[in-house]
Image (cartoon, rainbow, N blue to C red; front, top):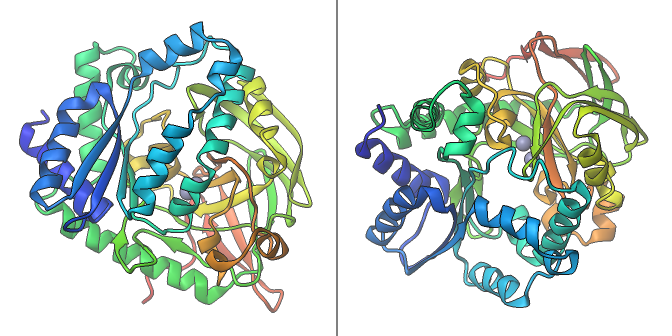
Length: 414
Ligand code: ZN
Ligand code: ZN
């Protein structure tokens, strides 16, 4: 049974380890209206910690759906400038940004995917400047989730809404280590483990990774100067923060022109309220040249057609199959969780911070170094207990990185 004390600990963890809120710093929170109680705890704690100002943008799934059902396309795609300015002004002020993401995975299942695609693209375009703040670690940001009724019932379809929410709380507090005596200390230890793993991979400096699993045979080139990251990140100003909670991945970027072969998904993908499931993509010289999906093929097509860069990869992340998220045995229909149960790759924009000097490069330089650009960045899961990964070293020799879904390489640094 989840109690108030547990929620307080979670709120505290999100503020300390998540965005690492500083005295006199502003905080912008995007939160589901259903999670108002939890959000108020976060806000109270933020002020206790000395926040200058806390601003909430409420997200209401039901209102989002009503809008899709009732307004014409041009209203859907019209993102008012004041909304853009509001977000930008917080970023310019160096605010921390906390996203509490808990969308019903089936919210938009009856809406024409082309309308969803248009609205998503318009919103991404409008938020382009704001995104440079987060994707270049100019400000501290973090994504967490709390249970909401419809989402919880998607995961536990046989339970009442109340029981489903309770069960999801139980799962989440374990996964984000809030059930431990000192979650902040537990995260420090976890971050140290991820740091060692990324240091081992940076030392290895693989030229290429080869993925083999049922339906998957994929070669993925890593650009010169690529950097493996994972766990805590650091802002330009030197503030340590955790972009995702949970996080179990170490990640880098594939060369945007250096991906060849076919990859099969291993978990359903919740893309903006629509599910894409059992799908595969075939790449040639970095670009998706063929795709199919048992569910949500239209949605997948719209995602790939977002722009030129949406057909190329922007991330490769390694997650051992025995991660706590994976151990829960649940499919969350929420990328924040599912991506941390499984190796994954992302269509769309790469993090410039995954390349040496990348944050200071212009678009042309990034392209030359193989760093993908797009309005979108969508992770999808390709890991399973059947995944093997080989690493090709600079001298051309190959070694095992993953076997049967988990590390074959010693990433403990001993
Ligand atoms: Zn990732
Ligand atoms: Zn990602």
